[in-house]
Length: 105
Image (cartoon, rainbow, N blue to C red; front, side):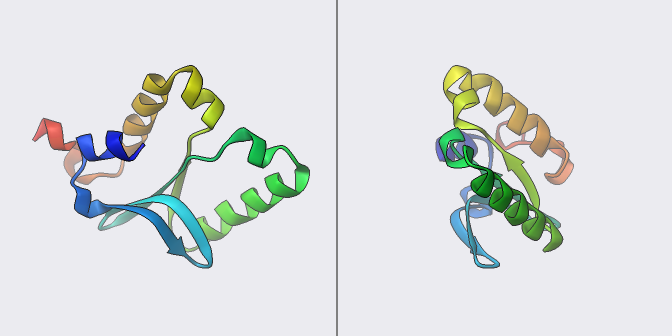
């Protein structure tokens, strides 16, 4: 995922494995006004009710702190990672300055 992100955005805004509010997130994209968390969790992690409930709690807590969360499931990634990357970039278009990626400048 990091390789796809640095193709589109400056490295300065991409923070991998960031600790936030007692949680460690896969990626934080710091668009100054908007802080986007990208989670790349595997489906097996969420296979129990307890894990799923904890994940919902975690996401709610991060959103209460003002972060925007986007999740990529590993099963969808392995089936069609190009589609998942495209969905992520469409999602991020709403938040980054001027709607431009590094390659569009």
